[in-house]
Length: 414
Image (cartoon, rainbow, N blue to C red):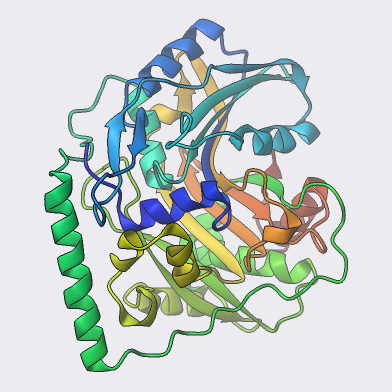
């Protein structure tokens, strides 16, 4: 089934306490109750699909970890009782514990009834298994017939061959970097000490839904795009929370896949946004940034991170892609995701969460935003990682609603 890439192993290390824990999550809200038998079918399809794999450690020094088929899965979680809208996000945030594709199953399917008579369904998986687009592909496959056009990782070469290849790349790349003169690593800005961090959860979430025509019209009116308006909204929400810096640096993931594979196939870039920027100027900055991606530290080959011990690799890559905010545009979701069997979805969201994150491990990132389009709506998912300024899910929801209303959008919160 192939071997792990550099980015896969970065996310895998977060399960060992080396980096910010992160999991991907898809959320569906339905207009009526989803029956257990249907969810059992979806669970079975996911177990036999591309998420059904685990990590195997190599025996040859320098060889990469490999993917192995694994049909073992966490049981379908059905929460007793019903959830209120106010309790929804805290419930969803809690679904990411104990998912690690090396030691336990790497994904979980969960459901709960909503007080309005509908259901919420959450699919949560380790970021080592998939990025945002990959999770969409995996779900689309599970909800319909298997898609032969959605390839999985190819067969693994022998460990000896892989180790030889890895060491060859590392040695040649390191020698070339030394000949060029290894550039100084860019300074990685870490989070400044907080005066006071409230006790309790350190992350809080909100999801807003907005008619797509309104969103597109607001973007076009200001000379921007749906994506640049998205970035401006996330930036503005952070400023409204009391973030003091006059410039906010935004980390922007880039989907680099050339076919719909279920894995991590992304790169990172970044832009700086000032208070005078508009969707038009952000659009120009982002277009330029997409051609300037963040590379391995010090000009060294990225494969170096796979042949040295995990703690060394973490030390070299720590915080490299982190900025003040993260803005991940997942794109348009397949039409199949607008329903679960016969049950119409009133909303579908795709985002990341941070299971078991503590105050001592807070990253530089203060606010993460995830945008997707489903049918005639855009869905904006937000995760606050600044508990000193964003103290609750309700506080984040109000900040987001105030910001979108000020932008002329009639968004509503889940």
